[in-house]
Length: 498
Ligand SMILES: [Zn+2]
Image (cartoon, rainbow, N blue to C red; front, side, top):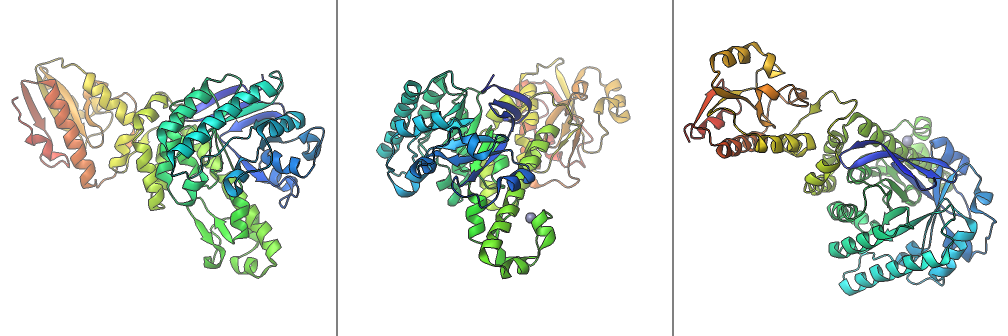
């Protein structure tokens, strides 16, 4: 059925899913390039050759210019999933527009895109809470109006925008109300562009989390204007399913060149760090010497390739259950992204809630620094340890830095186990804390890679974790073995008779 959304793979709170539309299945996470409806500077064939079978265009501009096709697909062709925006962005940029919500929605209902957005009021960067509240209330009223205007049996997926940023309580209210409206098969978070432009990526993470944690998990979730490759994986990890943006074109006009990690000015590049058809054919100086129209077009094509590549990287990371590692790595490419990462880690219990316990392809986890301790797998292990009841009155801790995993089969552990039958036996392990030897075959207690040299924070946080667990278990005696030369030797400073 149109609007059905079937989840195929999950990792953290992100997912690969299929959205059923009138013009076929759309795999998410998906990116909708913004297309000027009057003049396609990048042809639709070109768009398709890069790998986009979907785009978003502006119903307000079409209507304003008196373009009234029988259907939007009659104008652009049947082989694209087409989303229409409403002019809300124009309100954000230029203030009021001369169309009502009813005008725009009736027009969209007539030209029948696959996915349509009504004329919401973007909160933008409102400092004034009252103004932000008004944008939320008006958007909600207009959302109700749509239900009166359009035939509910129509095959359009209507999108309900969520407003209120930067006021998180308003975002929460807006998200809850929008999520309650069953006529809407898709939700979207409005106006993140203002935060992206100011590199306020941490605020953006707060907005996404607040909206996502207050809507139903099963509904596809769009982020308006979130179109730079470096932020996409963070948003996907929190559960964003689709994006749209004109940044590929706006940046190109300004000689800006996108990569997965940052944006370059073309003048600053001696070499292209990319092998797309544009970058394999030209070098930066050749592009700079071109007529501006030609250069603009080639840069826009490159930028689209980079966005497409990022979507594929994110999807592959989800398939492999490595989205956390991918984002962790990406966080180190810019301090603003590191802030986004840290902001996301505040929501690690939300990520853990949706992160599947069993993932098909994952052979092990890669652990790097103390941030890795916020991975869902490690949080889950800590919870398991908190709940574990002691079997014996005494505990024996073996420091595991040099043991073979799974620990239960390590000859040294076997021998210690044989001689200490009246002890609960644990291995002390960097990142994890304590691992019960009996459970050490469970994923990922033996399936991990850790650095040979550990940083101080990882060591001290692991030691604190171990001490806290031991304090709570009230063992009458705690014995340590193999710990003198271990990185975790400080665990021995806990009182051994409690
Ligand atoms: Zn390129």
